[in-house]
Length: 100
Image 1 (tube, rainbow, N blue to C red):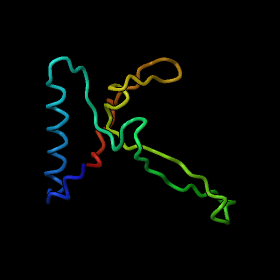
Image 2 (cartoon, helix red, strand yellow):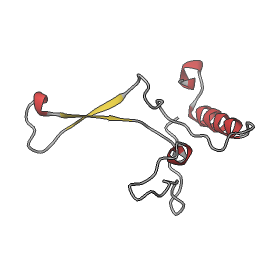
Image 3 (tube, rainbow, N blue to C red):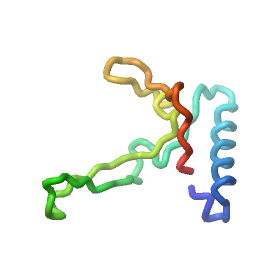
């Protein structure tokens, strides 16, 4: 969903996604909500080509797939670290600007 296609500017888009997340969290039975560019196991992938210093040819590039998520994503999805701790948003740093 891209609100800019409906004429939303950056400020209104950020407000839209914050309101969406707040309203989802307010629903009965919802423990946590988060935003992500694509859903897990969905058919939409973001990719990037990775260049190494020794890479000279296009066929030697590495391909990486990624997702853009908000700070609450790992907690919402209950994704843990290898040590078993629940990954939580950082508390000592300012929250990064949402990509939306």
